[in-house]
Amino acid sequence: GKSIQHSVTIPEGLTSQQIVQRLMNFDFLTGEIAQIPPEGTLLPDTYNVQRGTSRQKILDKMKEAQDRLVAELMQRKKAGAPFSDGRELVTLASIVEKETGKADERPHVASVFTNRLKRGMKLQSDPTTIYGIVGGKGIQDRPLTRADLARPTPYNTYVIEKLPPTPIANPGRLALEAAVNPMQTNDLYFVADGTGGHVFAETLADHNSNVAKWRQLQRERGETPEPESTTPPAQPETGTDEKPAGDTSTNTVPAPADNKAKDGLQLR
View 1 (cartoon, helix red, strand yellow):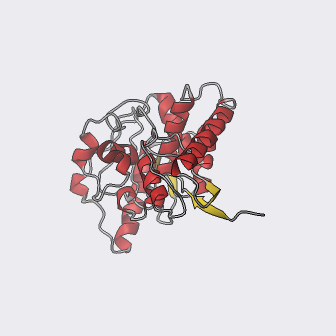
View 2 (cartoon, rainbow, N blue to C red):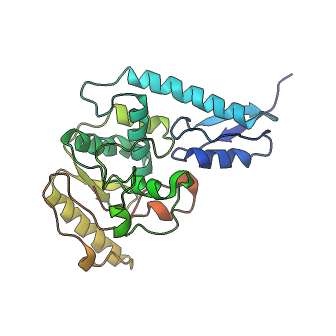
């Protein structure tokens, strides 16, 4: 009398459009999806269902799970948190999700963006810039350019102040928890460390030193760092600091389930 359960796994960090596309690929599900859900309203997870379950029903379950989790986390919101409601919490968590592929790094990354928001600094996050260009497609098939970083879109955090107007993906539980409870640091910057993680810094001087080490590592690996001639001069720590484009791997990861900045992220 037991029914066979099929697993539907939705990885963290996919856009709603990517999630819909993924659901359409499961041949044991049924039905069409009339409308792509708003960004950030779905909770990535593994859902066990019976053959013949409608795709819309799974989306409904994902939305209910997200609503419950966000409501729970908002009850743990600390005084002075840089978000005022559940939507902004998910937006911050979506940026954290897209910036690192290491689960244990998420609270540290969240602390950098929290510190920046509290100090009135621009977030300067490459994944937000990419989302402003490609939207729900989620993946850009070319490296970011300096022109991209200067291009005014509602999501380009090199241009806009504070958080983007909506999430840029559907973050997972760990990224949401990191956004609510970030590590307590004074860090304002991070750059790839060559192992898939990042090295963090409080000052621009230390960050520039870390960037130089990363570029040297790239050269030793036979990779081509961005030409020094295109690197803008270091700016004072007033929220106007910039990074050179072309050193991000966010938009070059082929698997959409893992489209996060891991090895090439230069800036913060």
